[in-house]
Length: 201
Length: 160
Image (cartoon, rainbow over all chains, first blue to last red; front, side, top):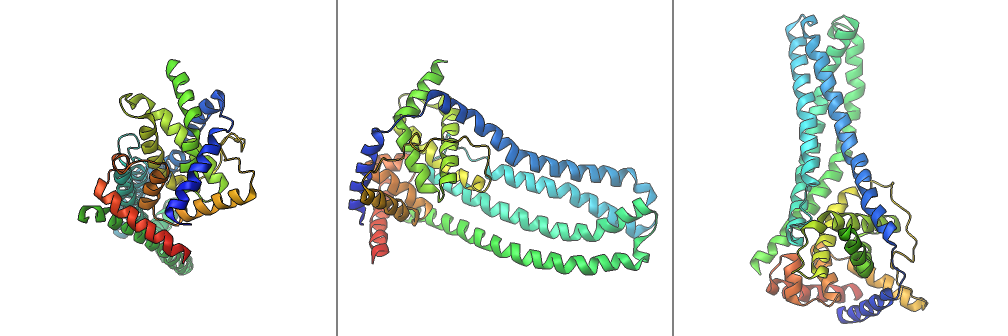
């Protein structure tokens, strides 16, 4: 089937569609209302819940900071609080960027370009979150154990045991996830190259 | 109220356009329904900014194509959509089995193209001129010609 043949068939198909039953007015209106709820539930709620959880953990660390009596535990607490602040900000920003394409004003070319750039930034944010998460695991565990249990966890063997189990798992997950991300980034970069070709033609 | 009435009329008249865009950019029936509804939602959202001096179909194509790209992110987030009767979704009534099969091949061929090409070829098949395609997509008229030449070759190569 060549392009001209495709055009012919497309025309026939379009003519068939003209004869079809039309959507009812109430169905059209319910479509416009329904999707708003759908978007709100699926995108905003998980992001906001995650951010609130992080901020609650920051407050917990700051309120109990005076209970941490060694320098390295205080350093762990500061690093953890910083990561808990940066992570949701980076994540929410990336999600906002990719979902804030101006559908009304953009041309198709601009939308494709914005989407591809947003995707690359989103992948970068995900990778950054992953690295920060690995550091957070290292720093927050002793702080949490000391604040809740009252003992320096670095002096207990079980803490090191948790790290020995957790880090190979984190490494495996990172390898699997990053492989997927690399493909996404490559696809987005190819799209940008394809769009840029228009400048050279 | 008057706006709502006009909007319903426009969607009823151009339902086929939305159906075709939704079918080109999705792979499953569920995604297709979801994208169809998202396009209607975005058209309603942008309806206030529509200026009557522009052709309604040109405006609709731009919003529909932009929505199809932006929708990519939501593809895997299912649920909460309304069930639409298959007939109401402007599915062409291809009573002839062969025609239906050819129609499926047609969409499958278009789906093999990249996103830039998909948009251009869809508008070309809809009978738009190079100038109109350029106006909707933002590529230059010369670029549209060059790209369509390449698409023709690509489609030929698909058959070979």
